[in-house]
Amino acid sequence: MNPPRSLLLTFLLFPLTLLSAAAAQHPVYEPSGTPMRTVAEAPTPHGLRLIPVSMRQRFDRDILSGIAPASASLTLTGWRGETVQAQVLVEAPDGFQSLTATSAAGHIDVRPLRYTTGNGVLIPDIIDSFDGQHFQGCVRPLLLSCVLPADAPPVINDTLIVIANGTRLTLPVTIAVCAATLPPPSAWAFHLDLWQHPDAASRWHDVPMWSEAHLNTLQPQLRYLADMGQKTITCTLIEEAWQSQTYDRFRSMVAITKAADGTWQYDYSAFDTWVTFARETIGMKSATLNCYTMIPWSLTFPYTDAATGCRVAPKLVPGSAEYEAFWGAFLTDFVRHLKAKGWLSITRIAMDERPDNLLKPALEIVRKYAPELKIVAACDHPSAINRDFEDVSYAYGHCEKLIAELPDRKAKGKTTTFYTCLYPRRPNTLMYCDLAESEWLIPMAAHYGLDGMLRWAFHSWEANPFYSMDHVRFPSGDTALMYPGARPSLRLNAIRNGIQTFEKIRLLRAEAERQNRPDALAPLTEALQRFTVARGQEAGIHEADLTALDQALDAVTLILFPSAPQP
Image (cartoon, rainbow, N blue to C red; front, side, top):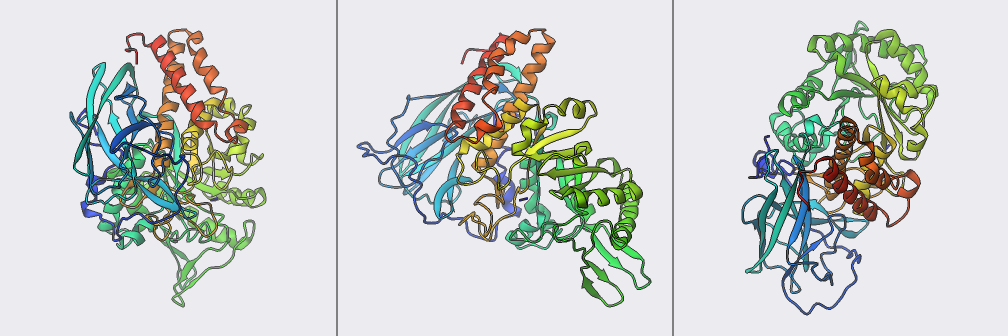
């Protein structure tokens, strides 16, 4: 298958200031491509202007928007602890000779959006910085963000200041702050599982694997992920668990050698470096170590033969004596190592879309040699074997079918999530998808009572993602949600906004129960009825559904937290 919060925002979400020691080895530029043509071209008699627009839409850089500003100011609403955002277009009919932006009071951080291509079409997807950048086209989207601190006043006022081609443009911004509080991401319940790929960072930044320079390039990327509430650390036990489906290989974090006397030797240096880095440097101490995999797609298991000095890769089928000999020895030593490191309780053997006829004998080996290890798996459909896994993620289309099983799994402390990959065509997080779809997926999980979401590729970059996100086999954007230099995609940003909504829903439900006021949830319950598997696959409904959910959340918040100011 595919730090503390303050009004002087340090912009944790987009940690580009951490990149001086991890600068990309490649230039950042925008390609030429076919315009998106999503906004009707219209004559624009005016000159430079600022236009507040929906956060859930994309805008073509080469087509004048033809959109009149709804007002001369911008008003936002949010909980304390929440990151509130807005999108503002800078329109320059004669193009951009220069462009910078900031906020007067420093409460708001401003980032320009950059374009890359998907299927040859220019798409705004890269959340970037103004440093040394030249901007093409006649429309440039800006992303405004403000982290509302836990002690935020009821109202925050600021002004967006844009200098475009030497002309100063301003837009007053007011943020109404509700009394309700969103906890920090480390306390979020949403189970986010985005698979990491350290090899891609090594190649792009041209640094040796597991060197200090390599970890420096990874640090801002993983900090962003941790600030989304990421719950897993992706580890690889063998070479190419996914049969070279990505531009960069997935190398094993454990070096396996068969000694001349036939015994097995294991070097966990890379594994230990990666896990220690993620847990200690990044702070992901509550994350599980999801270790892929005992059933690779190719069923080949590379190791070094010390007797010959050669690398060999025998094909071993689960259920065979050879498979048991290989994995029995490994699991026995792996458990020993995990106990010594104190990581046994957080380690999972991870499987990915493997059929039951291979899962069954592989699980028998785990239970025989390492019964302490629990299983995590992404499965394209539920079955008698995978229903009891500690952490299981099912393909999008099966969400409705899981409702009956969820109470029992929750009672046992087990995790149940969903995933998207090539399927479905919509809703998804791909380049061709409406931007609102990435966010829509998350409250869908809340509607069905699921714990979270899995996506197979956080940063498995193509050859040059600043030029193109196309893959030789998969839809454009399938392999990455983060760009080099820790530049988040709009799609990843939308997922984070959806997670904030998920947490609000969870906390409002808990508050209604605490106050014994289930009736207060009626607007929210009604709005969530739209978030079904079937409806999600319809075109053009996702932004409207999210807007209705926003209105319901505001209404319920005002009921349960009456001291909250009116927006």
